[in-house]
Image 1: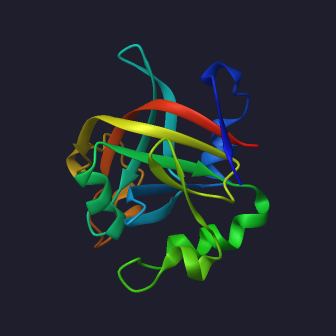
Image 2: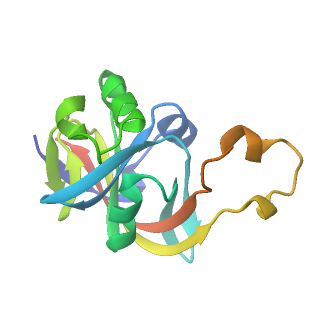
Length: 169
């Protein structure tokens, strides 16, 4: 399977559906050593005159170290046929298993970064800015800290320039 690079202006999709309902895989590292995780939180937009993706990773996730270590990572989007694979990648740690193998997805390289042959669309991303969420940042009393964090650590946010968009050929 191969990917074709397109101009970002060719994209036409609902980001609320693409990220929040269909999910994405955030992958850091290289073909020799990488990890991926499922994400259903994120934003697409413009910052500093650049097209950006913002994603969030908890520091206790195995993928966190891979994204921290490198300047770039990928965000890969899949069709409904890969729902079980994404569910697996979101509920198992790469510390304990070969996620790609067990999820039935095939590592592939695009733009010098790791994605998966089964992806329908891939963003290559270059980190521009990071910040850490903290409880004191919540300005409403909606119960989000207890509902979404409990004893889990708060996420690190990555605002990354989308440097390439690839679609399945």
